[in-house]
Image (tube, rainbow, N blue to C red; front, side):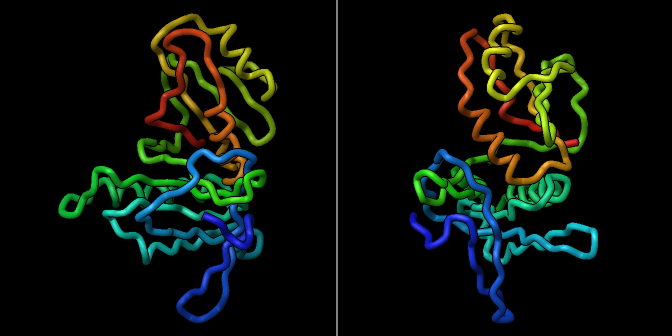
Length: 211
């Protein structure tokens, strides 16, 4: 699926005005193509010093795969509550539910020169701090912490493999609510690249915390 611009998706809205969304970019394609999909858009809006979003979900057909095109400038504290509303709507649908329909975030692969997608269908978001004994990997705006220890991004894989013994307790993923949506997508792709050497080491793929 090729587009004229990797970083800007131009949209024609009902009033005839042209709008734009600046998509996140990364250097890796997770999923290269999605068929039978409905696009959903989250626009960046500025009102004085406040950052807002406008969600266009008019074309969201329940039985199709949903592709969320979200402006990279939006902070997670604005994006994730809207994503949760969309997920809730699709999960509660009974009459026309399609168990095979997935949800994807769209972004631009700057190396492959193509649009790319990352699935998030199974993720249940929580806008709170995890209250559990599970190990926590927290992606702040400018650093990463494993529990309370700051770890360089380039050293995260080795650090996790060194400190945790073999077990079946999943690690929780947490993200700073004030970080940008673009950094969230880049971190999600980075997380998928990590290789664990010990049996049972894994991230909890069913929930993520944003606070």
